[in-house]
Amino acid sequence: MSHGPVADSLKAFRASGSPWLTLPFFSDGGAEAVAERIDSRAAAGAELLPSPENIFRALSLTPLDRVKAVILGQDPYPTPGDANGLAFSYVGPRRLPASLKVILFEVVEAAHGEKPVFRTGDLTPWAKQGVLLLNAALTVEAGKAGAHLRLGWSRLADEAVGAVSARTSPSVFLLWGAQARARAPLIDAARHGIIASGHPSPLNRARDFPGSRPFARANAWLVERGLAPIDWRLE
Image 1: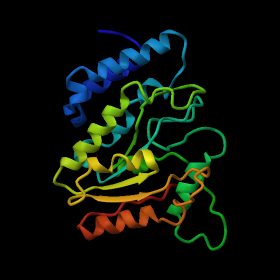
Image 2: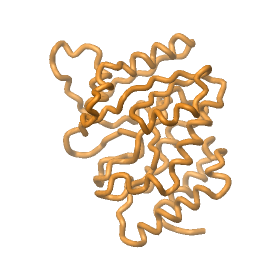
Image 3: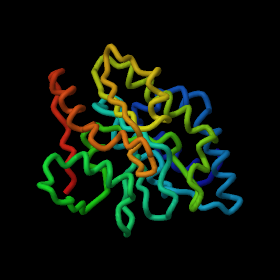
């Protein structure tokens, strides 16, 4: 068996017995092929992010049978120490990333004319409530955003979305930006909710994310189907 940060992380994930391991990506050698490609980058001197124990964290914290909502991101933050394996989640020491601040403004329903103070960008509480925070690529290289988007991870994202869609239990998909919305055809819209909007990045000139109320709409959709709403607040 090959060794490297991704291969070792994959080995640990397999040992967990996660329901996600039924995906073809994990059963036909696809995962090992991706690990080999990325570990070769590490062997060549690239610094891989996030830390190995966090690579499969989104799948570990939110098993397939517990998914209530899905939020798709692109890839981890490319600055060491910022990412913890969950899409958009930030645990770095500096101010929150601009896109995450835009996202969290939508969580706050009544700011009373004042900008709310966000004390954390760690979205772990969402994942533990059944929100699958999945990036299209689970790894990145330090200082090189998007470096691993074409190394095979996208197949995992496609299969994960398809697996959630195939369940009879309803889930709601929050698709932000063109890349996330491109996976809408993988979702059975007759069974699951789709709340699509522009990307929360301030660079999005259309500005079609602010005011879209994705979290309130997602909770309303869940409640209408007899499911408990998600507490989106972060302490």
